[in-house]
Every structure is written in C-alpha cells, then in structure tokens.
Image 1 (cartoon, rainbow, N blue to C red):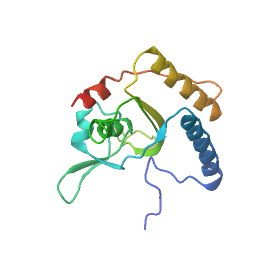
Image 2: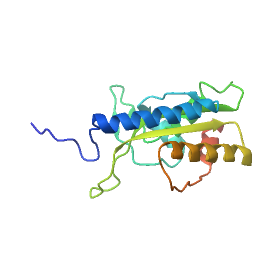
Image 3: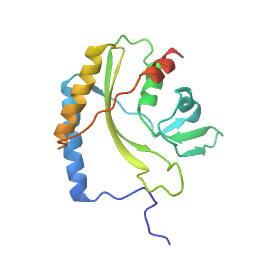
Length: 170
C-alpha cells in the first residue's frame, strides 16, 4: 500500500482548517452584506462547456464517464457560473450577484512542476452590471476581503470579461 498524498494535494489539519474556516466565513459574510447570493456549481463539467468559454485558466483533470462524455474537474468557477447564467438563468433580470467558495482542480502543466493541484477558490461574479462603478465595486470588495484575511500588502490584477460575454451570447 502506498500511503502518500498525491503530488500537488495535501491534508489540511485542524489548526490550519480552523483558520481557513474563520477567514472563509468572514469573507462570505462580507460578500453577503454587499448583496452577493451564495451559489454552488458541480465539481464536474462537460469538457465542451469548458472549451466554449475560450481559453481555460488551467489544465483540468479529464476523464470519460459511463456515457462516453468527456468531463473535467472544474479548474475555475467563473465558466460554470457563465454556463448557468446562459442557460438556467437566461430569463432573469440583472444584475445578478453571486458569491462562492469551492474547490478547483488543476493538473500541473509539466511533469517537473510542483504546485498545488487542488485549491479553494473564493470569489464573486457580478453579471449584467457594466462600467467603472461595477469594476470599482469588485476591486473594493476584494481589497476588503484580502484585508479580512490578514493580507497587508497585495496586488490585484484585472482581466477582461470578454470570455464571459461570448459564452452568455451563445
């Protein structure tokens, strides 16, 4: 028997898990206080859905199910929320504000990389709101969340929502 944890995965023991839980609760409460509703997506997604969103954020773990569908363990939550908005929530009037804390899974890009392959992704999505005020809302929210988590110095990187818009248009 090989009783080791797979490379890129780890056990989180009680002391660290308690700290993570407290931070997650504080950040979720912050997001909720700003009108972001909780949402959960499945751990597995059909690979075609992941590809429809354009470039995937990382290499997902892939496998076939019993129906011969190619599935991926979610490497990111945003694409799944875009799928949900484009399908199940297509008739909803916006803006839609969602928050989540979920595990994401990413395969190492090369064999010699030693990096986490299972991470906790905590975030928000604001669907249907555009412009500088919406951008400022998100940036301010994440700066507050990082401070709640104990970060004293940090850099926030901004990206385009073009992928999300393209998926929603489909």
